[in-house]
Each structure stands twice: as structure tokens, then as C-alpha cells.
Length: 122
Image (cartoon, rainbow, N blue to C red):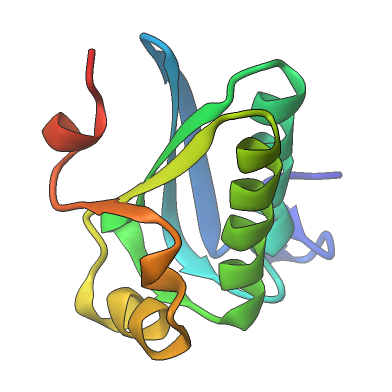
């Protein structure tokens, strides 16, 4: 799959940077997380879990939008991480994104941090 283009024609509205930080896998999605771009985050989340990285930190400070599909990607990663004794931490949610989590109650199943410094114990 061409990770820079959705459907091969339009530029991706979501970019995801991934790097290891100590025992954590830090994922930084930037842009819009929705039905059309969800796979761009799902793939590296699954890849990290498949590689045995069970502590995932998602820096949401660059997310401008998140719909129910994006929320489900994060919830799915949380379930997979939880099944192996891991966890998913969310960091720096903008108000529009935080609202989706609050309205759905998803903010109660994630550990949410204001800053990366509090999310990364290393």
C-alpha cells in the first residue's frame, strides 16, 4: 500500500511518525484520522504490537480531527496491548479530538497525559 497516498490519487491527510523511546513505541499521527486514513495509523500500531512492543504512546498533539473509525483503531490497539499485559497512552489531545473521546467515554479506558514527559517514563 502506498502510505503517502490514499487510493493512489490524493495526498495523505495523515502522516504517522514512529520511533522507539526506551521501552515505549512512540507514534505521532499528524493530520486527520478518519475512515480514509485510519489504516495509516492501524498498520504501525499493529506492527509495533506484532514486534512485541506492548507499551504504546500516541502523541495526539498533531491530530486535527478524529472520527469513530480513528477512535476504533486506537481502541483496537488498546485491546491488543491489554491482552499481552501492555497499554496504550494518549498524549496532548486537542480539544476537538478530546471531545470525541469524552463524548464516547473512551477517555476512561486510556491513560491520558498532557505532555510527553509524563507519558514516557524513561
